[in-house]
Image (cartoon, rainbow, N blue to C red; front, side, top):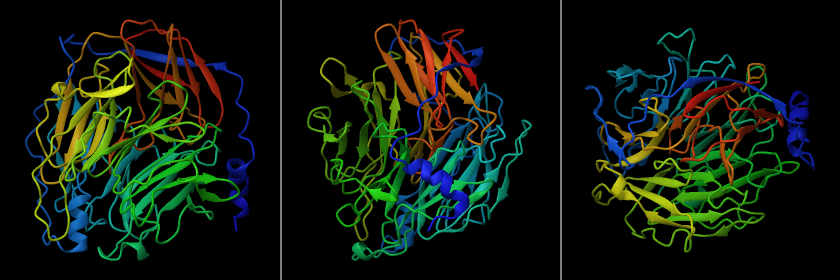
Length: 525
């Protein structure tokens, strides 16, 4: 039964046809220059020294204990975003057996991290993200652990303080592993899906009953939606995201579940109620997925999926039905039984608009087994003419760590994407991109009249003479357990952009005349 106060919103999501798109209107854009690019002779990612003080994350105790095992596997949550609004990214590391930490950024990089105790999460942080919870233009932090979620409220005004609100969101069962943000009911507000991993017994995963995913709607406060995607027993989630995959103007909720042979992953679609259409739309069985990158790889207008997994990765081509493209697009991907891949991070280090993928690897954890050595992360680049990803890891100068989470940012303000990787058993790794010649445009939205102030989920289309680059304002981020700011970064080589179209989550469309290239834009509605 749907509460009357929510009926209008849910009817909007469930109508037979999506609301008609508005006629395009001009939008104002404020611009500022990017920092000078170093014009490096070759692209790549290289580690930068962090200020001393980042704590190690000691391994929990008994590998046969469920709680210790999940804490071990689900560590490494990081967030990179400009929390204080000074134009420089800040960094948050979720603690597991130690305090969480927060470091404020500046022109010289991240400063000295300060402890951020979270007694509300006594078993540690298993997920973190950033969003503007009040629609006031200031980004807040959301952090989750076992059964609990705490809001770290940003008071605004450029100050460097966050106040903890432990009861803003009610507890839910399981280890909360992922935050997916988006306007799921089309009312202009920012909604939240919290995905949880069940507290299962290792030898009885099929009867898990304690992991419960939850959808929260914003109605002048967080309200638990009566119509929920999922129920007790579905929860084995390691990643969730919202995206309109079938192009009907309504968001679906994609949930990647561990133990895929017992608890299948889900694609929740609204049709007079939430329905799992994972198998119906041709998505394959995946045993241990931990992350997904959603973007249009082949330029056909449909979003494609890069899904990480144990032993291999899966590349799935979008369309009215999905088709497995792993053997074609991913013909060069490794297949190693003991490899465990976490985050799938979209990049464009060559600044030419051709997709690249950073895949973050950790180690294998199983009760009673010996941990394996850390596995190197891998970088892949699409060979345009062949539509196949080729190993570009020679451009990746990254230390080998037990990686899980990852978040993109821009430490030096040059428009080239940098990455922070969270480790299971050590401090995070900051990877700075070598900035090569090529046009760049960094875009942020400001929709002051709506709760979804930063336009999370909006589709941005950058028109070039012979192609259109498409991206979406991230709602959480592509990193496992992790989050990043609501920023879109385009790169387009030596081409000249002709315009930018913003398709807002509520159906509005804005056309933006570009006042500059190689700059940062704030598009206002």
